[in-house]
Length: 188
Length: 263
Image (cartoon, rainbow over all chains, first blue to last red; front, side, top):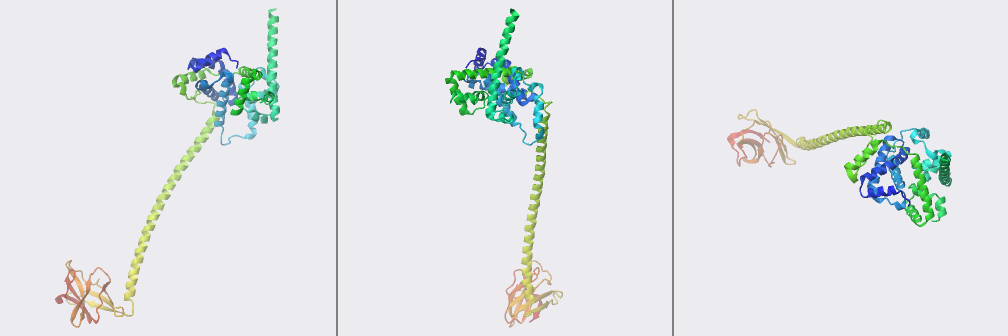
């Protein structure tokens, strides 16, 4: 698999027990992972704990990382996602303390807060494409769970994900071309 | 597995997101090793998802890195995750739930303590009741035995075949009284000697039957017993009471005769 050379170097150092390599990887990836964790758990104090726990797991389990199977970020993302999901499952109340009839509205309110709002090119996509990516990537839901939330067949949901990723790539290509043209004409 | 099916089923996306089962993961890893096209597509997906993550990145507070650094430096590989956020000021929901849980625990503990005390009290009461029941049973048993004895004695003396004979004291003990109940049908004699004056320890009352001028021993008469069964002697003409050395005598001491009655 293609790997960032710097990452490969840091990972090798980390495998050899170099703690500084962990802090360098933290500097590079913590914000991306924190964005995922915070959107999943929607609670800043908990998200900070989970981010720390995720990096401790990375430190403890780096020996099991196999670059042949995927990028370091993909591996780290899975650790952060599973750590968060496990915590959320653990803290799910056994006694219903809320009025479920307003639960969906409450989620909708939370989504409107700044830290959960989607940014970047993703925010340019059509709402159903945004929601599909948001559910599987930032909410930690499986395809089988997410299609029910969107109330569409599983096949349609898979199409949403494929189309969303395709549109993201197209949009990114357009932006790259635009930046290139600006640079060319700007210098010309 | 067919490449087209892998792509249409979104298995690469699900593999990336960690949604597949262990068997499916191994299968996809094998396919990715063998199929360069699929590998390129997967790398594109990884890139795209990573870009999404970086575009939506949120910078964590410095305290997280400091806490991570401290945890790693102090505890080494066996680091346990520490709560870096300190007191959760905004965590009212969790605090509320903890408070509810703590309240339930307190109520449970108090009710357990109360129930334990009640149980102990009930145990004590039961033990006391059992002891009282046993004591009552003993008393009842004793009363039954006493009643049986008394009834037997009553039946013995309250019988038309029984002849009561009063043995009055002579000049030696003029106030002494003893009553003998004789039943010639059943050939039994019972004597109530409680009316005889108490004697010194080394002396005792003894009763004799006179048959043709010969005094025959009927038995000793302790004064602390209400009815004393004595030996029935055929053809007795009179009953006589003498004072004898403790343990009784083979022959009556005539000068110590205190009472007699003719039959």
